[in-house]
Image (tube, rainbow, N blue to C red; front, side):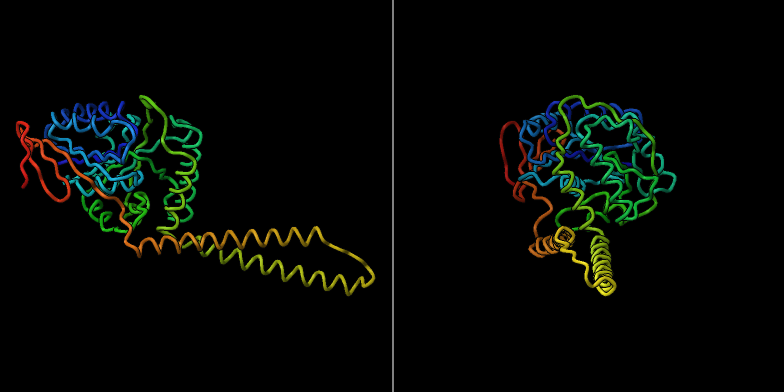
Length: 334
C-alpha cells in the first residue's frame, strides 16, 4: 500500500519542514506502507521553494512542484494530485494545524468501504481567525444548499481519498477547480472523523475575506445552477408583488377618488428595491457567463514551471518538458 501526501505551500517557510518531519516520523509506525509527499509551491513570496528544494535533496520521498504564479490553494491541490501515484491520497495544510498524529484514524474509514474521509473539527474549537471561521460557516451553508452536501459533513483541508476518486477529480480540466465540489460530485460515500485542529506554528492564515468570497463564488458557479433558479424565483416573486401593488393602488383610487397621495417615498423605495434586485441577478448571470468565457478560452488550472526530486544518489529536475540529472555538479539533458 502506498500513500501520497499533497501539500499546497504558501508563506510556510517556517512550518512546512515540521509537517514533513511529522509525516516521516508517523510513517515509521507502519513499515508496510510506502509513501511519497508532493509539495506545491504556489508562487509563494517567501523562501519556501528554497526550503523545499534543500529538504528534497536529502529525502527521496519528497517531490517539489513549482508553479509559475499564484493559482490558489485548490489549483495547487490539483497540481499536486496530478503527480501522485499512491493507492491512497491525503490532502493536508502546510501550517502544522492538520493533526497528522491522527493519520491512521483518518485512513481507517477507507479500509471499511468509504471512498473519502474528512477530518471534522467543531466550529467552536477552530484555531483560526474570525474571518476564516466565518468563511468556513458561509462555505458550509453554501455547500449544503447548492451542492447537496450532507449536513453532518463539515469540510476541512485534512482529507483522505482512494486513488480512483483522485483519478475522477483529475478528469476536471476547467479553470477554477473546487476540490470539495469535485469530491461531492464524485461520491456521497464519505466518512467524517472527529478531531481537534492545532494552533499554527507561526504566522496567520493567508485567506483574506476577498479570497474567501472568491472561493465561495467558485464553488456555486462551477457545480450548481441553483443560483440561476433562485434568481428566476426572486424575479417572479418581485413581479407578482408589483402586480398586486398595482391592483391595490387602482382599487384604492376607485374607492377613494378624492384622496391625494403623492407617494414619492414609496415609489423611490420600490424603484431602489427592484433596481437592486435586477443588478444582483445580472451579476449572478455575469458570473456564469464570465466563467463560461474563461473556460472556452482554455485558461489553465495551473502551470508547472518545474519539479524537483531526489532519486537515489542523484537529484532530478524536470523543466520545460526535459529531465536533467544533477550528479556531482554536472548537468545532463535527457
